[in-house]
Image 1 (cartoon, rainbow, N blue to C red):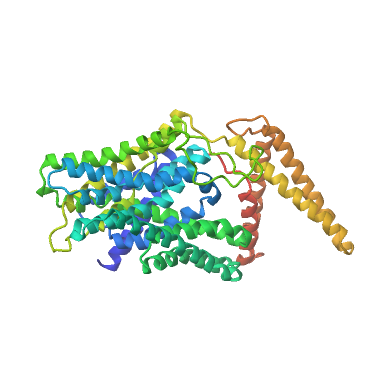
Image 2: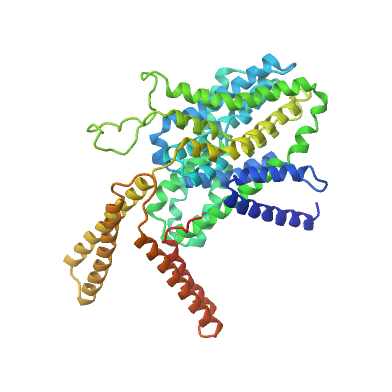
Length: 553
């Protein structure tokens, strides 16, 4: 493809991604579904088209997306819900793959169990990007966000390992249950070890990472280092990326500077925005590749295979969630406890188990199982021929079924996820979250006041006295404001109450910041302020504005 053609495709993709985001913000439709449909329409038009290269997707696109999701996750929250996360990301993937494999072996003419399990392994892991984007917009409760995040971080390693075993069996190498379990355990344990090595290996770079630009460069390189290290020793690269991201995100606040944190967050938000857009456009453009080889199959065979795949994807998940949440208490064992102790925690014991999921929560989690690009990338890695040189059994049919499962869940479930959440009334308690944040603010300011008292008791001069008193007055003003806010929030539930005085103060503060910006620009235009000085002062105003609550959409 000519370089100018490639450049035009890249620019067109960016324009479509921006337009889809704009349309999603104004219509409430998920951007993922809009982009997938756009790619699907483009695939039907004449002109150059992009075919998904599974190696590029798995080694270039997936590591940064997984790493960014891990940075945005909570290691403590995942540990507190470890039983459910493991059930969804490991056991449910295995069950879904086996169900699809058995269905193919029983009802699809000529299909083998191994080939069906290979397809099942590809379509079993949900891609939580679309569900999380919608869930955060509609205010999904934090526990459900944690479960969706945790499942999406860990299930890819399970699926890709199972896919490797199933492809080997379908290619003629034979299948051994114990061998498969051993291979899976080795890949998982090795992936965890590789992720920990990378997470701890960057600790000596802390001094370098205090510089925002250097920190961003290291952060962008980290997921690829983890992935390549794991793949070089033939263990799970995706699990290595996830573990490295979770550990680094948990420890970074101890040493990361404020400037570094602000810039790194902004960089990863841009990476997510562009890569997710490209991924969903690629999904839609794979239509010609997946229908090209369907002519050799009878229509009834295609219909049966598609029904088995889509049916298993849609039905196994809610059935699994219901069964595991309603298991007898003796079987309802937790794999990990919450590390946070409260008044109900026995001395030296674990916190009580997280409550079981309600019917509404099970419904929402069931509908959050949208499949994505990893499913397509995985199924495209199925070889064209077996070890003996024969065509891989039903490869074209497997590609079509995987594409259909992705399309149905991404567009169908993705477009209806937000209305379902609203209809069920399952929303986070914004007032409770705001109350917790203000309590933490009060505690942080009181810690600062305690430190000022310690400094006051140490040897110092009159200049230190003046600085201490000035800062103490500012902190007391802040803590009084937080306590007044807590009084307002004390009996609030649901939405955060906004007093007319608070809203008026926000309007006035934004108006003042706008006026300050205009004056700085006037100075620059008159030649009284150089551009580098303007940019420095603008950053100060930007940080002040960033501390204000977001404007309502």
